[in-house]
Length: 54
Image (tube, rainbow, N blue to C red; front, side):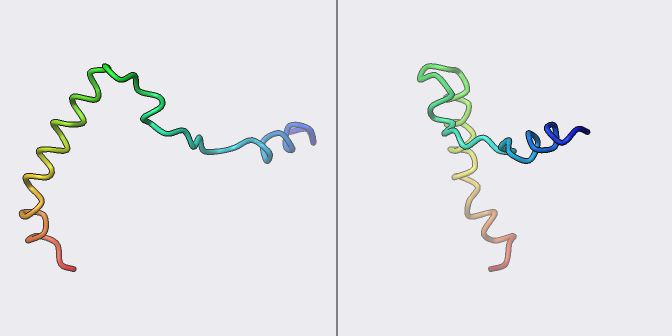
């Protein structure tokens, strides 16, 4: 790898810090799926708490 290639690799960002709310359109079906999953997980919260020790 040439020196310029190595420099470019080190200076580029590995992660993208973009809020998902900004990337998913308001009426996208994924938002409904998220709500269904969040509701299901919330209803299982007591079960998860019983299984995992603090």
